[in-house]
Length: 134
Ligand SMILES: [Zn+2]
Ligand SMILES: [Zn+2]
Image 1 (cartoon, helix red, strand yellow):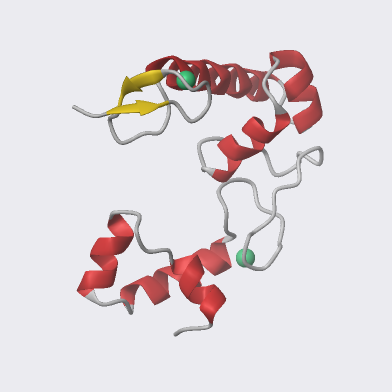
Image 2: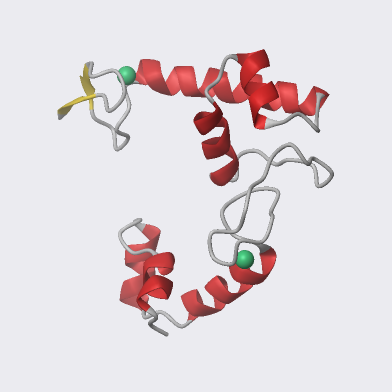
């Protein structure tokens, strides 16, 4: 058993692979639910409007979107989420379809060892792209 301080509130908790204590995780889940429900009712709401209505910080809402947990409707002009690779507007996640295809192809070109590291989160394809490796 390993104790750790929560990255957000600093409280000591039993580490289970996540840097947040159970209270903060629960808070995130509740925030996520609020944002999701609001977006369901108001698909065209901007991040600012969602934040005002739900009390969830705009950065957190953007994070939910980047994690691919939330998707905005394509006619929502209030939220600008862009592909981290080419800058094209996207509805969810971090990359556009095109770039995902390229990244997937590059992933297939990885060695078994690199694929394992990637699955463990120790290896990032975006790092590889940044370094200009093929
Ligand atoms: Zn906490
Ligand atoms: Zn892209």
